[in-house]
Length: 307
Image (tube, helix red, strand yellow):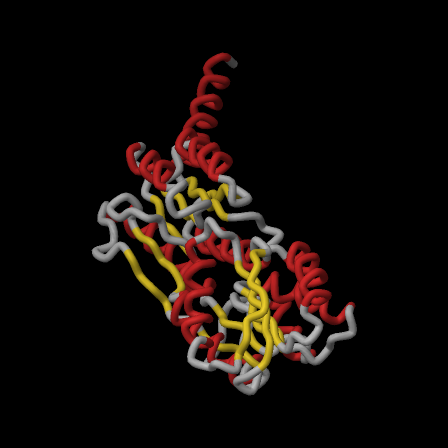
């Protein structure tokens, strides 16, 4: 009986170690944002299809929480980490720590302000996408009128890049008048509150251009609550909720980030590195965004379009 127990224990330990060796981690911002939930879900599905156990965590854009999650992944012996980081500067130490532990990190959606630490940084071409969105916004506005810009989280590099893309386009149209620009921190509820106040200060606003879809949804809800149903609203990300709002006529357009592509791509690249011992030859890769409006929204799914 003692011998049998020893054999059972040995097999249990073997399977436990094997499961631990096959772990991958996915760390993203909070999953109450459909974009971040989609990237985490797609990475998890891809990893499981490749035979990994998956630990999916969210840092809520808190670099300290992110560091704690990275520590957990290191302690569990993860094979690799897929990370949508909590700050371009604040995340460098966490990525370095993972690399020092022999665990490659694949960044998706957001870059860090350092190279040679992450195995890859896969991001959407936010500037190109913002130019697309800005051009569509100007056209929808008839090249004139008062508008409001809702900006994303100020510590997020993408917030500044998108704002720059929008404003570089709009600057060529002198009859487009920006009456307010305010951060709503990527949040739908915060965008609603911000818009309620801005509407009172600027009752003649004709359009709202938002740095992401959740803020666009919050702005649209505030405008509808105020009976301002003709105000043009533009988003950025390509969430299912905004696709539905475009169909309903509540939002004019969005810019789709093909997260379904680069989230899956990151996991497969990481798996290749673990399997072959070779990191990608090129660290940074940029994927172009797509403009989605009433003319093509029917061809789009969850952060993926067939055109």
